[in-house]
Image (tube, rainbow, N blue to C red; front, side, top):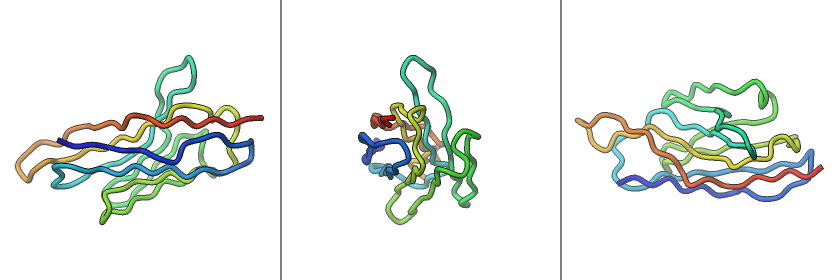
Length: 121
């Protein structure tokens, strides 16, 4: 079984910064893409950013220039550095990863439990 454990959420003032971490553990042969999604209050979950195994990145327009995604393959961990935070960034942030449990298995999609980010004005 695979687990994704997030950390780093919290309360911050507008203009501040937070760094989210998500560590994958368990039966892992390889990790393909890793990413972050968020769900603002009363809204649907949306993609924030993702990073491939080849370190190609993609960002939602609303975070470009403010957020940076990165990964440490040795630690099976993905990070999200969030700068210049705005009140509209308030949401539960979820880690996502596509992971193969063995050489012969098909990749599966896994989610973290979510971490709350609240930006005050």
